[in-house]
Length: 84
Image 1 (cartoon, one colour):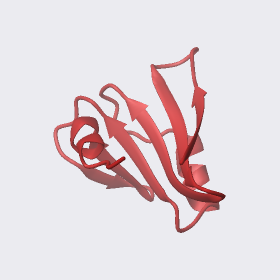
Image 2: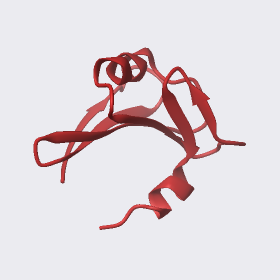
Image 3: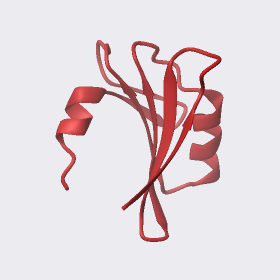
Image 4: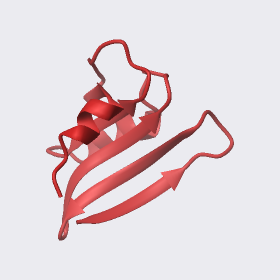
């Protein structure tokens, strides 16, 4: 599994990651503290890479949502389901 990252230091704290299995892109992930609105870059990437799961992980999320082809989920629960 490979990980690439992009941070956005000039705006609200967030990072965008992509996970791949070999040469296959598997997940697009954005991490935020409390904002539930997906960044336009994540939404654009999710439209560009159909078949790849786009997820926004939010630490302080009331309930999971689905916004513009992006799953918005609680960070702790989603990370807890990962396997090595």
